[in-house]
Image (cartoon, rainbow over all chains, first blue to last red; front, top):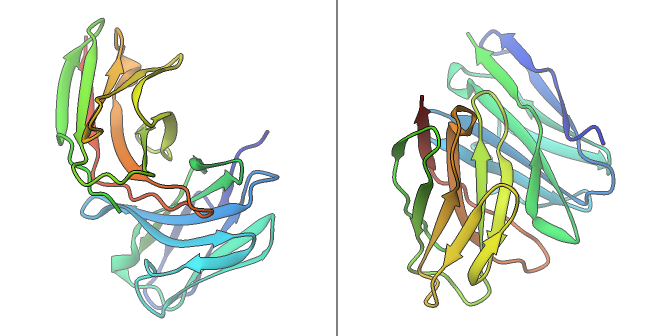
Length: 114
Length: 111
């Protein structure tokens, strides 16, 4: 099993640019989570999908952030326009219906907005 | 969601047993207790989960007293590679699962 795959692993961009982070969950998992981690705020849940449907997006910081899950094997997190305060490590995680509390995390995308 | 409280950091030496305690005074009847481990530059990794009494796997043991208001993660004979952040989470499965990660406990194992 390849585990959760995220791309890119590192992204450096300039303020105002659009950033798209990608995630491929583990095959067969029906839940997908996007998290953001910073030193100041720790690990924060941004949005949660179940069976490709957004269930809880209360953690999305503002309208500049959007997430989609067009199918069971792919999700994107988009930031438009990006700001320096968006710099963080973004993690994607997935879990299976039979064991929903065991989340499998990807390696993360380290985003730097200059 | 039940709030958890755990020490910010702990220090230990190789070969020692480490016990990390987490308080969750407002735990609900349906809540499970789950621990994750995060190494630098990696995503968190599931370690162990329990509801009551004791659970043991190849990595750790989890002790939960009868009142379930706290739990203790026990790591036997730690090594340098156990240096990581350990998160205690409390939540209930209700068809959908969302777990809230706190700041965790930074465990530093020294030679």
